[in-house]
Length: 326
Image (tube, rainbow, N blue to C red; front, side):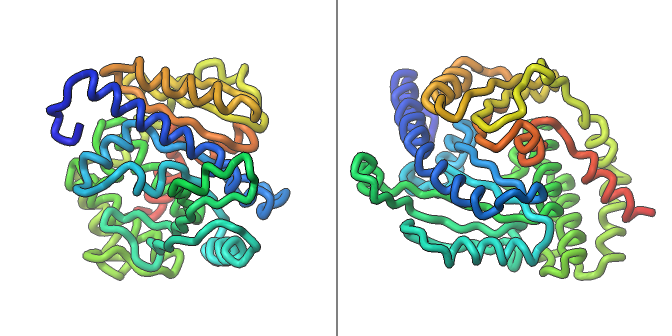
């Protein structure tokens, strides 16, 4: 599958292996989610959501990164924690690490202190899932890795805008692939936001607000990036009024060409049913430009806040950058 030389049957068999291995992460992922949700308590300004990595992203990562193996992929199951301030990002993550958890800590990637070249900023913790429940002992035999992403609201809206324009233009901008000017625009904006949070800027950018704003304006003047973002702010949300705003699993299916969003809701006890539907939708989409994700959250409102890219909700990013121009 890496070089595209596999037969159709080989491809189907490989995708089935990926589907099964990804689905096996659902239970370990939920254990982490419940722990984090419990630590957040009743606070409504902390977003906690869990998601299984999209099939398209898994395949792309296997093809893109030489030597990458499915069992080594640390973000098949991921929890996203969005906090109001940078101070709380570190205090909340430290609170989790110092708590009495049986899971094996594997590593920390601090992309806030050292941003990625793409401009991505967030704090990642990777754990190997462990259980002391006898009937779940099979999880101790395999390296089930779960990634926890702690980020501020500002870091969150930056990542959302990048993902959204990547969906719309069908470019892997998150992976640093695509239009170089658009990539540079987001890198420089990331440094601008880093200065706002008193954090290190992205390597290769100025450490001066005025210089950063000047470069952003120059790129925007040539490419009209903000106008492009404004043009894709609205998505047609099918049957939004029928979607229950409560705890459970949500499948979001975004057609980024027609800007149509469909979703399916499953009760907390219907994880297996949700996984079957998730696999079915990914398998049947063919060449249709769809982006599909399975998410668990405390409510539909939380899903929209944690994954606004599926709703093309990037108004806050546009407003923030535009404000700098004034």
